[in-house]
Length: 319
Image (cartoon, rainbow, N blue to C red):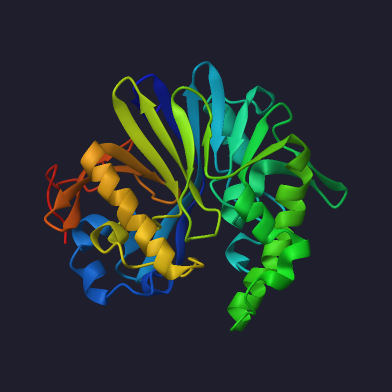
């Protein structure tokens, strides 16, 4: 079931949901229509539907097996959650746990759960339960949660957050309280709240990467000379590799998010780190190369890399 390996670390993608989310330029509002249209040949069908102009994405968990331990990176939306901020995922009902089992992962065998940040589609399967209460879904795991995000989204600090400027922002803030209550608070007894950087093991290191949220983070993999970086929501769409200044509509500090994105892409290109975003469908992971002062896609990495962008030569400069 392994999608690819980074040195001695096995990396497996377990999708929860894949499909169309919203119009492309709602998700990446600073992008131009041309960036999508000019790159239709490889954005479609995995990342964009040109017929509906819809951004396509996957909600998924990355399973890493490192030094004899099983590590989950981000846990998706979860079933049966009140999510008024995004009706598409309100009371979702999927067979995610069966898919996890098909990947050889039983909940009681998970050693570490990493939440790259606290958004509804990254923490949902932290817990199981419902009206009778929520319990950790992975009872033997340590949950690694950015301390900055935990403070930012904690209900007692809600008054410190910027006042909502629209109904959409108001719903997002209301939804954040629900997310904290059902997916964060119940696991705090098993959680390590870290800040700055955190060494998971000899192959894995968490680092702060703020902007998307105040505590947004990335997980670096460095094993036997191979490298990867799991970037969470630093990238929502491949068009942001071509135009790193373009943020998603979910980025809370746009200037900081864009600076973090460029810095991560520069390092990935210079150090040959495979970039693994949270929401790329298809292959799910990508090699980034420099193209003068810009970036290009070198190759797709993962189990679906042979079919995604079929007909496109390797190392072609897109855009």
